Length: 272
Length: 183
Image (cartoon, rainbow over all chains, first blue to last red; front, side, top):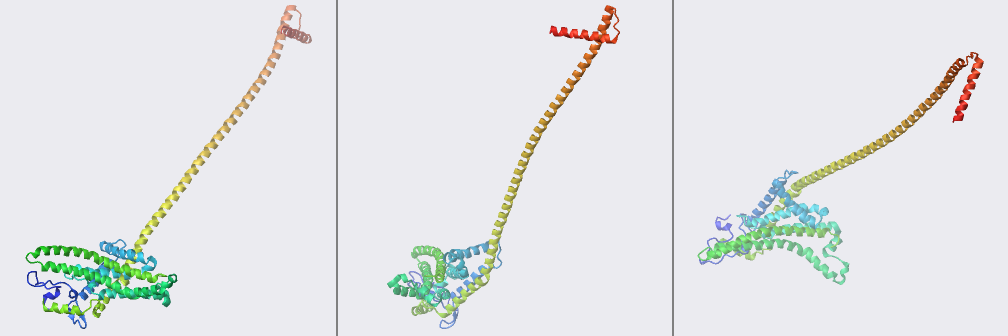
């Protein structure tokens, strides 16, 4: 870890309006962290990694506390955890895949939802203040897990030829358009889908974090002379955006899991 | 801006945010596998078991209540049936008693009638016998009286039995004839 205390912050705190220094605007560099240990060229350990591991421990800890010794008549904590579990199970999995076939994929959906939500929530947790999912590696890992899951389901369910029929949306009634439609579907489903699945989450959290940074830095930067009035407006925006992010964090976790279930449902379906 | 931030900014320019460094992929995978492992292998099966138990407990309670209700219904029906039967029996008994009573009254009436007729008949016979006895006794007494009277009047002994009875009979016949004629 660097000895310089400013390393832990996203911007240079000594810079203010009218001090003759430019606005330290947030950018790609806001998403890069000096490693806590190791070297960026090889093995290293940085803040998002710490948050990722800490987040998974928190999620497991919460469910451990709630479900370790579950009661038929639940306590408060168990009731809250059950509500969350039931939301994903009946609200997402049963709604898309159905109860009979979906039951098998409930653990994946529940894990994905609470893991992503926790990673997103880090964005507004003081000191952490960084959404882990705004680094592409984390959503990508999850999207790849989901991709492998639904592709293997399709193979198991439909065989090799059936897989391609399913993925390309083979339908004889399309006639002359069939080759074109199959090509588009093939690229859309097999190649673009995991990428968009990951980027959707990544980009939302990236943009949200950038906005939060922008207003936070601006509030601090303009805290000088007449700038205080603008700083106040910017600070109000920080609070508004924080509340908005809280909402977006849950929505993005929901969307990611909903898409996961839709992909699995498509893989299970007889004909696309 | 200090040196470290400038360096970071420079790194950012050459690094594409869409190309992930592999250590982060590994950590991401590990972090998710921790969550998935605990939830899928341990915690969700545990809570599922309890949710199932709860569902069964609720359904068991409902089933018990339903059984109790069915039993109560059957007992009520049984009771109603018994009550109806008892009512029917009572009505039947009352009817029977009425019929028996009527028969008894009719029988007693017939018996009374018969006894009355017997008594009346017996009375008639008695009266007839008494009348006959009285008539014969009267005839003798009247004969004797008349004989005595006649004997006294005519001074003639009418002791002779044959004669005496002949005279009495003649007298009585005369009396009867007179009575016939007067009628």
